[in-house]
Length: 295
Image (tube, rainbow, N blue to C red):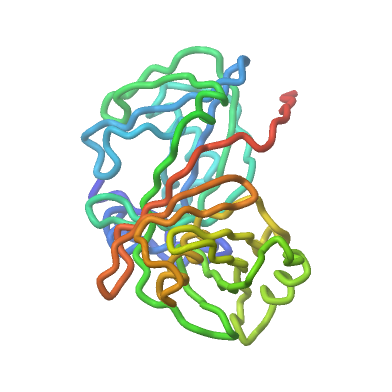
């Protein structure tokens, strides 16, 4: 693992360099990655339990397969290669989308990835490489819906007050605008205006309209760049709203309940000059269901 290198990229997924995998995660630098989701004909998702010997997140359940392409290797080819190496599965993969995410891991490592997401269909049990995965299970969507997800987020040290609101980076850049009632906000119109306001950010920013309910609960509605509209919920957005409210003394608890259009979430944190040990907690809920036809 120490000799393996990842491809460093910019926000357009253009290669800007190479770096040993561990060093890239220690420095939290953006790099190319992929995630594979395998379903069977019963619409169940194949999960793997990461081997306890892995250098991060050992013993945790995750999606079917995820890793990094090598220099000069097409991402789809890397996804197929690792799916065979980890799970003994060979099937047709199709790309669904890509996105950037950033999250703190254990052992003071940071995951900062331009992630290409693929899916495939397979109806047999995998043949595990025990150096990579300790176990597997097929789960239906209702089982996933019933699970409570808890994610550790990155540290936040800077919260700037600009344009009568708060600007901060919680893994994605966010602007928090406090208001007396989020229900009365035209999120599409007002969000779009603020998202493109150069006084807030030259590159554009996500907008979170935030209402204080009491000293331990808030409401949030979010306009997300890229989507260019309101979304049901945004994890990094509610983190931004909670920390901004705490920094301004509008809430005084270190565990805050957030009500969004998508449901209720909880954010907890420690604060000693910087916001650390930040956790986002809430249910995984199915909000869309469709069919994929493979020819």
